Image 1 (cartoon, one colour):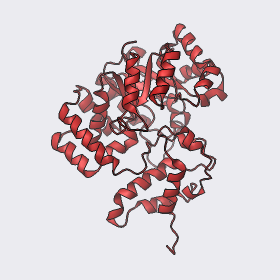
Image 2 (tube, helix red, strand yellow):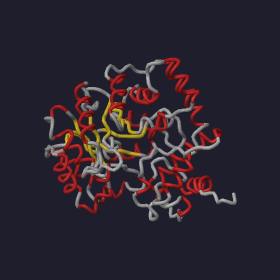
Image 3 (spheres, rainbow, N blue to C red):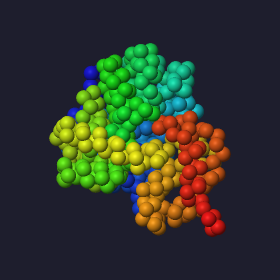
Image 4 (cartoon, one colour):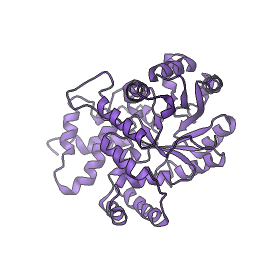
Length: 383
């Protein structure tokens, strides 16, 4: 497969969908179904086709939401749908049983794109041992999967290994954004180059780095606005990812119709970045790296197996915001933290088991970072 068969480069990520107002609930993880249908309609109306989901998203309700808002309302030739197999699903049956269940939940006869989810050095053999690779090949032959690939939060040497040992993998989904492009920890540029070397298309996740690149320092926003007064700050991140030649789709987790309209405004007739824009982004990276202490994307992988059920991404978000606002004197983050810990486990209760660090796609020192959060927010009256 030389390219992702999407009419346009923007993909709709079904993980961060709009939620109902506080106090309202439903059986779809409290997703605002009405607004989501409106977003789906608008997305398709503008000629975009790629939807990305996974069973585990939205408390294991995302695939049901997809059926409710998309597949039950449009014929399959109007859209392309991607979902994934994660090792956490092993308890639910064999890979084939899981995939057949996903087909039923999504209300489709086949998936256009199917991925092994979060393959890395630590779990690669487990995917092989449970027959996941072989299952994808067989079910592709049966017509239930059109294209097969994998998502990965690992380094270029591992990508080379898996693409060499499994040439049947047709595409790769990686985290790619301008802040991680030259990051020593994420190595997005080198990973992109490795996938391109194997002539496989790239699907981009986390182009706005969990919202980090939507809330940039004032100097960065000023630079962006000077050059493009009409474009939003997040547009620079989406366009950066989409401007990489071998990128087939850039996934955006749009949480309301406003974000959808913003993305459509510059991606409908997409123009790659020019050299001046690339230079402004290079300058932005230098500024941003000086201002963000904990580079968490909010993916919440770390929370699923936490024995103390600490809401780690929420605490990191409050901490990063408070560190930015600290010069302003009183900030609301302290109050938010105190209220949150009335029904959530405080950061200081971390037992240091390391489960979170082993699964963190960003390779963050979460245990030490939680200590920073506790020291920052859990102050005694004497202090």
